[in-house]
Image (cartoon, rainbow, N blue to C red; front, side, top):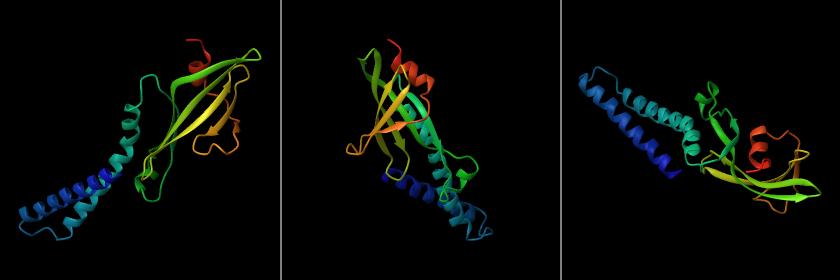
Amino acid sequence: MIWNLLGVFIIGLCAGALGYALRKFSKGRLPKWVIPVCAGSGMFAYLAYYDYTWYEFKRGQLPQGSLVLQEHRESDFFRPWSYLVPSVNKFDVVDGQYLAREQDGEKIVQYIVYRFIKDPTERAQQLTQVLNCHTRERVEQDGAKPQAAPRVLQQPVQEALYRLVCTER
């Protein structure tokens, strides 16, 4: 977060310097307000660039064999460009590591879903899930709240996830 803030200030300073240079090269014909407009525009452009490239950057850091399950796109009042084309704010990933057991003739698989969230602190959550490969029922436990009751997930399991954890290697 501190590096992002530092980048915003540096881009604002450079864009403001560009506005100042344009004013000097025009021999004062450009109005003085060009300098802060250039600085502000540069800052907004950097924030929009960071907003749209965050997801690809984070995906590039994932280990080989990771499976992106879901992308969450949301608009935000403080990011006006997101009303035109919302960027990815959160995404869920399975790294391909799981623990499989046989119980009552059915294969039960435990795996961890990592949810990456882009907010000022850029955090990640761990959600432990258990999947019955025979009935395709799933149960989720939030890793940050182990004392909370597990919840049964109603949405059907994705086919790519099912193939990853339920088929034999």
